Image: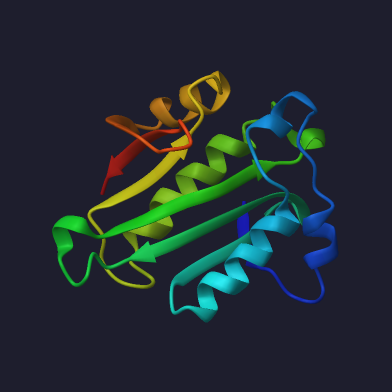
Amino acid sequence: MEFREITWDNYIECIELQVTEEQKRFISSNQHALAEAYIASKEGQVIITYAIYKNEIMVGFIMMYYDDGDRNFKYSSYGVFKFMIDKRYQGKGYGKEAMVKVIDLSKSSPYGKARVVELTYKPENVVSKNLYSSLGFVETGSTHPSGEVYAEFVL
């Protein structure tokens, strides 16, 4: 599995990736996410976007951020706020493999050291909840105003 930057050469393929009809209620489009990434990066936030490849085939997309906690390690994090595997490639273990890669990437501190990897998901998204908990993500007890549950993996 490999993470590759989104470029002029692969962005159309990236925005054409799709989840199942059932999953659309849990996630925005990749096009929406890339627009958010553009705006956030213009505001000085560290935004990390990757196409996920397996055997030279784009199978998914991930968007992350790095927050140094205002230079306070106690509050520093890498965060995942968009993660999807295309419906054609689900059920093959690629989601788990990609999330392991996210954890390894975060441990390597490409943008700076962090205490945790954090993410949110809708509580009714049982597939995501099971994936994240199987990797050691633990719900924090906090809930986003949108109703999503916060979970973190301590690095």
